[in-house]
Amino acid sequence: MSPSITSKLPSIGPTIFTVMSSLAVEYKAINLGQGFPDYPISEELISLVSQHLKAGHNQYVHMNGLPSLRNVIAEKVFGLYQQQINADKEITVTPGGTYAIYTALTTVLQAGDEVIIFEPAYDSYIPNVKINGAVPVLIPLTYPDYKIDWDEVRKKISSKTKMIMLNSPHNPTGAVLSKEDIKQLQSIVAGTNIFILSDEVYEHLIFDDMQHESMLRYPDLLERSFVCFSFGKVYHCTGWKLGYCIAPAALTNEFRKVHQFNCFSCNSPMQFALADFLKHKESYIMLGKFLQNKRDYFMKLMTQTKFTPLPSHGSYFQLYSYKGMSNESEKDIAIRLTKDFGVATIPTSAFYKNGKDDKVLRFCFAKKESTLEEAVNRLMRI
Ligand code: PMP
Ligand code: GLN
Image 1 (tube, rainbow, N blue to C red):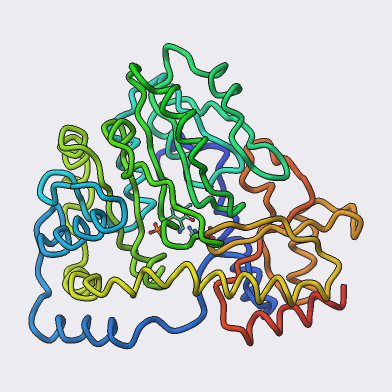
Image 2: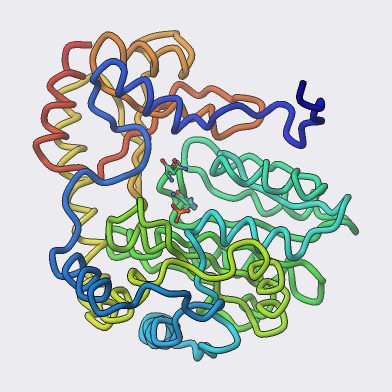
């Protein structure tokens, strides 16, 4: 008999993304739930990977990430945010954005530390904080525009506050940080020992000519930040699970102590390929427009249904309200839409610890036009 185990995360089951994707497979539904594209990735990127596989780039690369990849990331950061980043000391390549976030939290948190998290929150944040023995301090974003209530943040800060977690563009709402948010954040953290974890995996997926307010733009914020990225979101290859963390040298030094005994080094042929491909600036500059067209196309199609859109300014996602259509809970309607109408979505309540239910579902529009058309044909029947 196995020894009995004391769970570190007793109340956690499989993530909502896994639950809804499994249901989509079971009922052969169109999956607008879990965030992943269904269109092909760049042919050029695929052939670069295969060239590097054949060239023998199949052994461990440097534990901090392939140096040429880190150099080109530093160039990209300079081009986008006018910030000089030291590729040797401040960038670490990671197996995805989620890992970068987990590692940053594990690097910083001590038992009993408090971490401010805004809800709805990406599903890994709270468990990542708890597994480190720290305490999530939850602050709701305002509904329905999903803004940060900075007065509430001021009230919730205590002597134990170790970190503030930010995510812009935001999953699941598509909200983005504004210049005013940055000013508020600057005034709150100035002179404190509070760290910032900034999840910027959707940095390029920002619409309507809005500017991405990266921590990398602001030296006074960057000096206390771990900024996390994902190549999965940049090049539509979510299954590659590669990303990186940018943080000041002293913070990166500690981050790497955790990283080296967990992952050590990431998949090499993909890093070689990305180091080449990332030199084409247009490959990421055009992304916002590309996804904005998809958001607009989906929104136009959705006018034929009874769902009401909430604004999405970035990410892969848009929330739609079904108020007036049904009194069911978000979870119940998401399951029914999958089973009876063949369209999977994500209940937004899954991003709240207490399951707050505003009757809104999250739709992923990072799909081929034909997929979106077929999904909306089905949704029109409701
Ligand atoms: N943060 C957010 C907000 C996300 O939506 C995702 C999506 N996957 C991630 C982090 C993680 O990215 P990765 O797949 O590279 O781990
Ligand atoms: N980020 C993706 C989403 O929000 C899912 C990634 C995952 O399944 N962990 O849908």
